[in-house]
Image 1 (cartoon, rainbow, N blue to C red):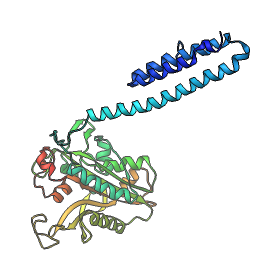
Image 2 (spheres, protein in one colour):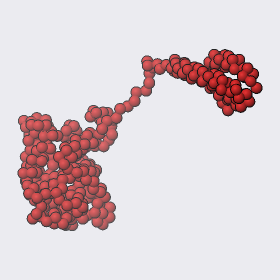
Image 3 (cartoon, rainbow, N blue to C red):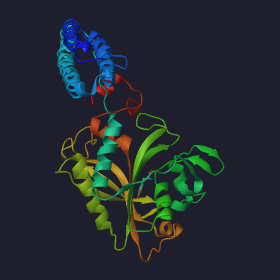
Image 4 (cartoon, protein in one colour):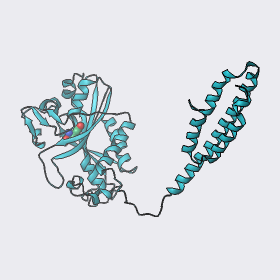
Length: 342
Ligand code: DAH
């Protein structure tokens, strides 16, 4: 076989003609297989090189390769053109109708109780407290005895308890978290323990399930002044910068001394209104210095370490802030009610 018999010009003209007629990406892909595939025309042509007389080989090789490279480049260029054409066609066919009516998607909201919990948590975490989780199903020991409330203590009367069986109950307060934390970690300690608590109580301001947030700080040289400063900072953060607090003497078995903490009424600023029942003050939490006996029960030396603790009702604070009279509104999941606090 010699150079003329390869009919290179004819083959090239034929390929160019086919390329001109390949008007889709699919047709072009088929043409590429026809030319460059395993059984393709140009592949076959390369194979015939071995039959060319040696003196024609270099020239034949160059000519075949020139045609091959030219055809590859043309195919690639055509491929781009056809691809763009395909995209344009798809875009035209799929144009979006921006005026069409579509279903309105309901936007959810964070429950007011969770908004308050998050805000309080933010404040304390920002001040170096850890968030501690304590079990809802609790033993009598952690819920009462370790907190200096022995079996026949009258303070148990205030917390009408759901017992599961002898010694196991639904926690009536988050205060048990104090004991669990102190057993687990060495001071210095700063923690809050938010969570659900349970009592056999049911009226417009009490629900059998409600929420508390416990706070505990244990370190050397902790005083009642530290407690007051902490709670004042917290009250200003939640109720506004002009808020002041006051301590009233109280009693809790696990703190000594114990106090009830009031904030100046954020609604009327002291002049008297419905929120503060005309007193100018709103009670928000109980607190005190951790009782020596509680520290001892947790293996902490009360001569070396002191602590303060506080506990607040999250439902109560939410109700005061949102102006709600009936605690059930926090449970009923009435969407119209929840939307008001978006
Ligand atoms: N656990 C108390 C209750 O449920 C609230 C409380 C009062 C917690 C004083 C405290 C505290 O940590 O120091 O009524």
